[in-house]
Length: 448
Image 1 (cartoon, rainbow, N blue to C red):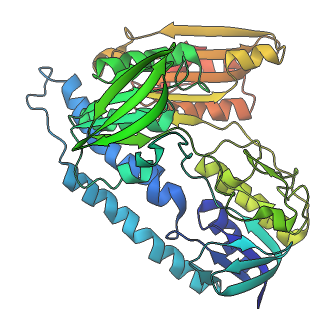
Image 2 (cartoon, one colour; image 1 turned 180 degrees about the vertical axis):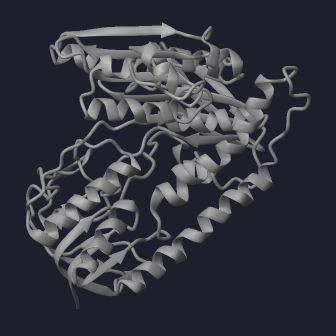
């Protein structure tokens, strides 16, 4: 049996942060991951996705400025952009493992299962640790209907050697929208089938409606209030069956993708043997990100049922908190700053802080500023159709409660709103700032 001060399950951004920080303080650390080191964001999510989106941004910009100075619209070379993407992905695991070796961290490449409160089984190895950290992230939801196993995952999409002529996405969250926009801009026929009446339910619906408009204009078929019940393989295509208001309908497509959500990847760890409380939301943790029922265990990132959004920067922040609490004892409570969230479609949708519904439920006296501003200079110079904002302001102290944007550069502009919310900057101070002009950020004073 091998013994450690700290053993980390999962080598994504949370796990990597914890392992390296604990090792830097002289603790004996081990880490394992059944997948290549790096986690979802670096290898199967945010980073490779953004590389691919870069090519579609060029094409989208050229289309908008066609006959306005641009004569030729470029095509996206799928093979070339995938090779470019892979250059980033392939570099990560060996780089991360080299860092672990430099810090004297023992590395394993195996799934883990609990044997008791502080012991694990990793293949043929038995591990005992004073502290065990669960940082296993999330994985695609299992589609438990007939033929559900035939649907590919977001990982599969990011590794397509050739782009299919037609694709169907099951689910109406950000993954479906982002990948649908990529595929449609590369010439594919795309359908999104969502069981709810509204897609992107966690975002401000006054802004989502603009993304729906842009999505439909791109030629993507958006089918709502439809529950998928079956996938069948037929020769060189798939038939997907769904039900709307009791009526059955079918869709023919070359490829089907499961984008129906990502629950925490904790249910194969045999947590019952360790006395760890958990739910479908993740490992139950206290304010120190320590297991609510087993003090030997901590959890961070998507594996924990914390109040943090499932975002990479949140996982890193939680990783630092867990590491600090392991090193110093439980001295650091988790506290979340405003967490910007982005749907990387074109146009981009971005949000931070409270929605109007949340402000209302908290009985805050608030004011809403909402406007469609396709006639503003920044929209017209970029020939953008969908440009809108919704800001929610506290009437009592004149600070910003929430900001919701759609349009060019929204993923960057939203960070300035996050700073304003965290620092409780008054709207008067924002209105009287001098912004560089003409930039998208210079529109902020007019959004308040």
